[in-house]
Amino acid sequence: MKGTLESVKFLFVGPMLLVMPAVINWMTTPGHWWVQWAALGIGIGWFFSLLRVLKAIFLLGGLAALFAYLQNRKVRIF
Image 1 (tube, helix red, strand yellow):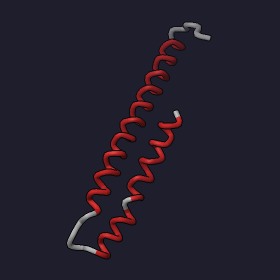
Image 2: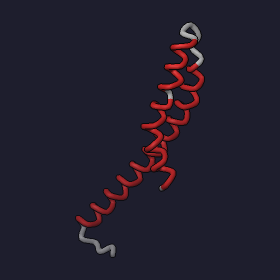
Image 3: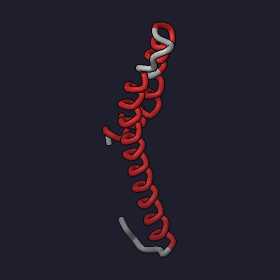
C-alpha cells in the first residue's frame, strides 16, 4: 500500500519536477529542446505510477462492490 501512496504523490509531483528544467532550457538554449529527454523519463515513470493507482482503485472498487452485494443478500460475513 505504501507504494501506491507514493505513486499518487508522484502523479502530482512528477509534472512539477519538469517545470524547472523546462524553464532552464527555455532561458539557456531556446533553439535546442533537450528537456524532452527528462520529460520522456519522468513521463514513463508517471505512466507506470498511474497504472499502479488505477489497479488499486479497481481492486478497492471491486471489493466494495462485492461487500455491498453480500450485504444485500443478507449473508453474514463477520
